[in-house]
Amino acid sequence: MPSVLIGRRRRTRQIRAGSLKIGGGAPVSVQSMCNTRTEDARATVDQCRRLEAAGCELIRVAVPDMAAARKLGRIKAAIGVPLVADIHFDYSLALEAVRQGVDKVRINPGNIGDKARVAEVARACKAAGVPIRIGVNAGSLKAIRNSPRPRWTAAKWASVMVKEALDEVRLLESLGFRDIAVSLKADDLDRTVLANRLFARRCDIPLHLGVTEAGSSLAGTVKSSAALSLLLADGIGDTVRVSLTEDPALQVRAAYEILKAFGLREYGPDLVSCPTCGRCQVDVEKAVKQVEETIYSSPDLLRRSKGMKIAVMGCVVNGPGEAREADFGVAGGKGRGVWIERGKQIKVVKESEWVREIIRKIRSGK
Ligand code: SF4
Image 1 (cartoon, protein in one colour):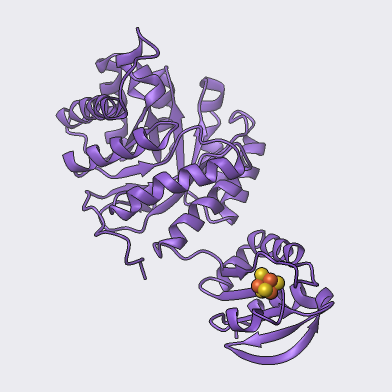
Image 2 (image 1 turned 135 degrees about the vertical axis):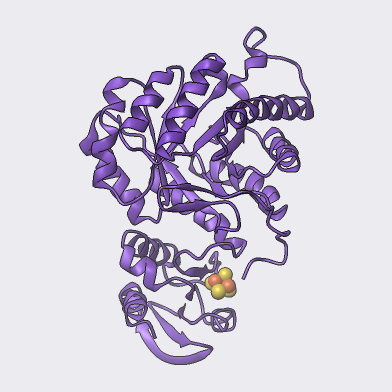
C-alpha cells in the first residue's frame, strides 16, 4: 500500500520502452546505468545481467562513439531488460543506436546540435517505435553556454531548465512525435525539485527522476532520497535512478529502498534491525550484512523474501517486543538468540546459525 504521505500520482501519458510501461499509472520503475565501456560488449552484458538480477528494469549505456553504438545490438540480444542508449553531441550515434534495436534513446538537447538533427533522430525513433528521453542537466543548459556560472536563484535555474525541456518537447511534438519522457537533473536538491515540480504542472509527459552526480554511496543516497522523497510525495515521478559513485547494482537497491519506504514498490524484505547498544552481546551488524548480502545477490531469495518483515535485534530486553510485528526474527542473548515468529518465542538459536536460519526460513516461505 502506498504511504499516506504520497499524493495522488500525477496523471501522465504512457510510453513504452520495449516491454516496460512508463507513466500513465504504471508502477514507478527503477533504472540504472552501466559504467563499463560499451564497446566491450562482454563486460557490459555481464554488468547488465548483474543489474537485471538486482531488479533493474531499464538499463542505460553510454554511447560515446560509433564503436560503442555498433555493439548495442549484441548487448540488447544478450539481456532481458530494455536498453537505453545515452547520446551526447553526435546525433548520428542516436541513428545507429536505433538501427541496432535499442528500446529508448536519451538525448541531451543542450549538446545534440541544431533542430534539424534532433528532428532526424525523432523521425528514426518514430519509425522504429522507440521513445526519446529529453535529459536536461543544469550543467549543460544552452542558456549557460556563454556564461558557465550564472548567479541565478534556484527558481531561475528551474525555469530555464523547464523552458529548454519544453522547447525540445514542442519540437518533437511538432514532428508528430509524442513518445517522450523528460528528466530535469541538477546536483542539488533545490534545483532538481523545483524544476520537476514546475515541469509537472506544465504538461503530461512522464518524468524520470534523479539527482545528477549525487556523490558517494552514503552522501549520494541521502541527497537522492531527500529529493526523490519530496517529488514522490507530490505524486511526481515515473522512473527513478539513484546516481552514485558506486557499483550500479547498489544504485538499483538504493532506488528500490526509497520506493519501498513509500510503499510504491516491493523489493526484498523489510529488514528491521536495531542499532545495538551497551546491552548487546552478539554481532548484529555482521549478521545483518550477511543476511543482506545473501538475499541481494540471489534473485530467488529476493523474490521469495518480497514483503517479509524480518527482525534482527541485539538483545532480549527490547528485542522480542520490537520484533513482535515481524514475520520472524531473532533477538540476541550471549552468543545465542531467541527465535521469534509472529510475536511468539519459538526456540533458541546459536549466533553462528542465525544467518542460515533466516535464509532457510525465507526459502521455506512460511
Ligand atoms: S534491541 Fe537491545 S541491544 Fe538493540 S538497541 Fe535495543 S536495547 Fe540495545
